[in-house]
Image (cartoon, rainbow, N blue to C red; front, side, top):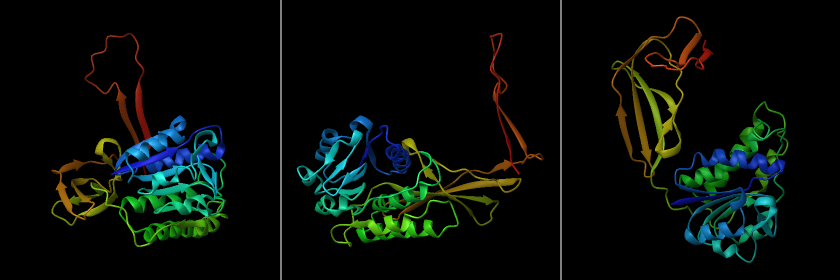
Length: 295
């Protein structure tokens, strides 16, 4: 299974924000990933990619209207002349009004039948997060093999959840975007399951006690999974990892015991260079530490 992303990046404030938040979605991708970024987010590379993998899970971000979807510098990527290339793909377009017309031609498509509005004061600020996070639930649920109906419902529920939160400001258009999101085809249809590891949970255990959930780990590059853990107290611990695949099968691995002796002071200083043991032959070095305050 392959996921294809069309991700333009040019001197347009909305596009700058969109490409930043879409990259965060790509970081969660459990499949083989093709990122058509910047100059590649135009018609020819997109057509070539979908011809090579017709059944791909396709996510496009860019401007658009009821007749077309655009990419880099508002160049047309999909219109009536090539939309049939995506007939076997599951398509999601974060783009204005495409699903008022053109988008309805996708057998399995999702997107917005009106203008997609969002607030923005900077590329990475919290004003934009509720809008992009809500939209991205469609693709996340798609990777999980959920039905079209489930994908759309999860995204709409997320729009509603963000709107119900006490902050930040700039939530006015969340209900509008929620109500503009639609899916095509049979709502009970679902994509082929993505084969592989879909979740890894981490637990800690003291002695022979019951494992305590730390949280869900985040997938990075090359099948690496990470999770920050705030250690509760000085003790002897074991870490337990539980991986779940696309069919719901699980496997558990537990580490050997290790000991933690928390510092008495909330001030932590961790030497980076030199740490000790180096053989230095220069007259000067750049000293480096990590210093932080941990209550």
